[in-house]
Amino acid sequence: KVFDLLAEHGNYKANFGVKDSKLIKEGKPDKNGLGAVRWINAGPIQFEEEITAWERPKRYDYLIIKCSAPLEHQGGSLRFESVGGATKVTWTSVTRVKVPVIGGLLTRIMVGKLGQAFGSMLKETERRLAA
Image (cartoon, rainbow, N blue to C red; front, side, top):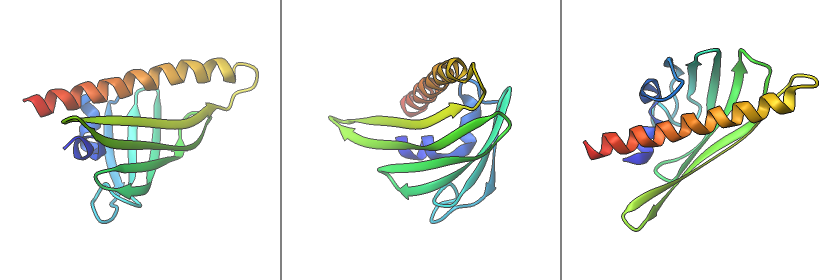
């Protein structure tokens, strides 16, 4: 259930910092699965991400393929593990802001905001499952 809620692009709008999300291209075997391309409006930044691995219900990976900001993304992954009746979610993403001189500072700021957004996604997922 946790995998399905987090993999569904339509749920992103309920989370911190996400204003809108749309499925541009359906994936396989699920619409949000392998090869899916999703557009996400995160306020000042809009981007498209492609699902590059899909192992329901254990993991999915993604790569930002277009971004309105000077962002370099090497990939991200969400992994799901059953732990004592709960689900442990591990999110990793390798990215940086490509701006001379202040890129490192901007990357640190962005990483903090991404952490807040992911935390919001987990809290919203937990709230939906408890309802």
